[in-house]
Length: 229
Image (cartoon, rainbow, N blue to C red):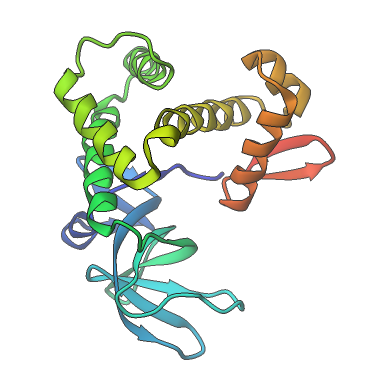
């Protein structure tokens, strides 16, 4: 099973305990995390390691990592602990060196906006929250979100991506989440089925599918069939 990579603050990884390769955060077990922070203390040996805002990250792959001291990076990986040392087993790393402070602001907003979904455990409550998230992603009015919050988020996105790309970025992220959820719920779903369910153009869906494959979220076990990794 491929777990969702939850966005958390580096200090939350450092302060909370790990049990059975899961970070215990607000009473929930998190097996994969996504953190944003500055690279420090790169150690290139048999196993490459570095720190991201104090969080130890270890890389067990055989490809070179294109990072250096001081880079702002977005890291996705599995929660691990060995002999009392907590670390993230690296899966994906992306540099965010342009507009570093804006990326940090945006990540804080993302965490605040999505953290509430962790507290819903019962099925009815989970479905209610998923409906609310879908409304936020696809533009349905949401009375819980203030216009001030929207203005701040849009200002940050605009400063990073530029005004003409702002709405497209938000829309694409929402569609990506929706496609990922469809694949999670329908094992072995095809491109045509996804297009039909979302009433979307095949080229647009295929492009997002490729992004999800590149990000390590899904894979294609057989031609035109997609599953969660």
